[in-house]
Image (cartoon, rainbow, N blue to C red):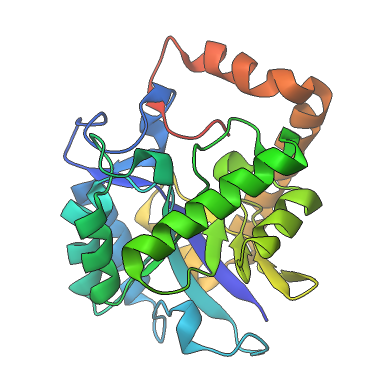
Length: 269
């Protein structure tokens, strides 16, 4: 199975970066304004034959390349802005929720999560607390993050929750194994790749991140599978991976200090 999965976070009104999702240092770079997101959707829709699908719409072993649109963190804009915009095109999204923040300011509430699911969107786990570096969590911590989040969402929705995404791009095999033990069958990472890994019966899918300032042409190109754009993201990802390895547990705090004087951000990437 090959997928082109696009990763967004929040969509906000112009300049209102603190209205949805996390507001930790550096975050605005992951938050698009409404007009910007609309231009992305228009560009993607303009690609002949290109239509985002849902995980439930194609078999796991399908050889045809699929396009998925995903949103991390569970900010309230998923309900107040994003869902309506997607639905105008007849599309649905995959919303990954950080469950410790449900029913708190700037995040989705229980009723909103149920309504999104009822409208055909996919709801998945983004851990309980959004740990700064999930790959450095202990086995017990990972179990609590995945099981606690999955169970809370299942209680809200009244159905199994079998899809999740890894916070902050900090993926490891143990992260995947504990997600699978919690009942997850499809796990999204932040690695920019169309390839699907399989660990036991767990499918691991990469994603291409679109930040504020990315042009509509880049959005459409990534969605259509442009190899040059994909390669550019992959090279940046690998370079950042080297830095993460060298810095170890200090990576997130060092990055936060560098960003603290500028914009504010949801993901310690």
